[in-house]
Structures are given as C-alpha cells and as structure tokens.
Image (cartoon, rainbow, N blue to C red; front, side, top):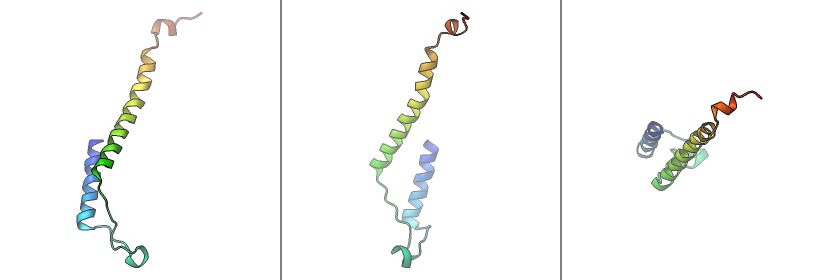
Length: 76
C-alpha cells in the first residue's frame, strides 16, 4: 500500500504542476487534466482501505483458529 500511495501521489503532483496529460480545450473547456489534492480525503481513503484489508485477513484467520483438530478428524 505504501508503494502504491507514493507512486500515485507522485503522478498526481507531476500532473498538477507540469500538466503532462493534455485535453482538447474545445471539447472539455480546459487544456489539461485538473488535479485536486485534499490530504484529509487521501488519508481517510488509505486508512479505510487498510482497515478493510486487515479485517478481511484477520476475520478468516480467527475462524480457522477456533477449529479444533481433534474434533475435525474424529470419525463418528
């Protein structure tokens, strides 16, 4: 997640200050792709993604840890 965050932020900053991605101004009314960087939104999205990812990894692990091997291989 950290590397993706760094790469995405770098691309956004390059676009914001250098305007690499150009648009046809007669169609879009702007000459380049506009970028708005709001740090609060970026942090909230990253924290939310991290929490959901952790929950999706820890939830199944917790359920599997509750299985007792002696009971699961016992034939009756």
